[in-house]
Image (cartoon, rainbow, N blue to C red; front, side, top):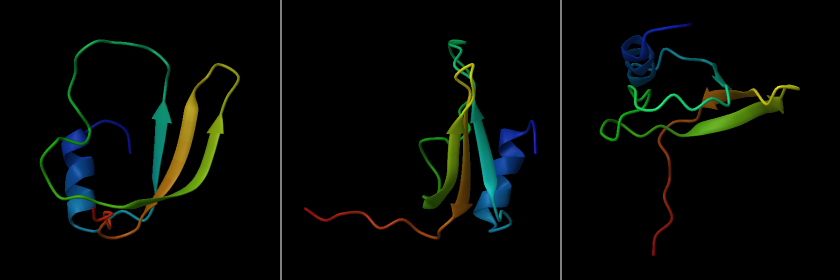
Length: 73
């Protein structure tokens, strides 16, 4: 799905995402809206596939993996 970060976050929060493909283009645009804000539920993601094309565009495929587990000190 292209476009709405708000819709993406809503779908993730409601467990309606089976797979997510993130495409990162190596360009610095300055400030902008964050896809994943600092507040909100944490979500673990399993990396299924990762590749980089000849222009440096990074393509990662993730699947939701429930709640993350953090290391204890």
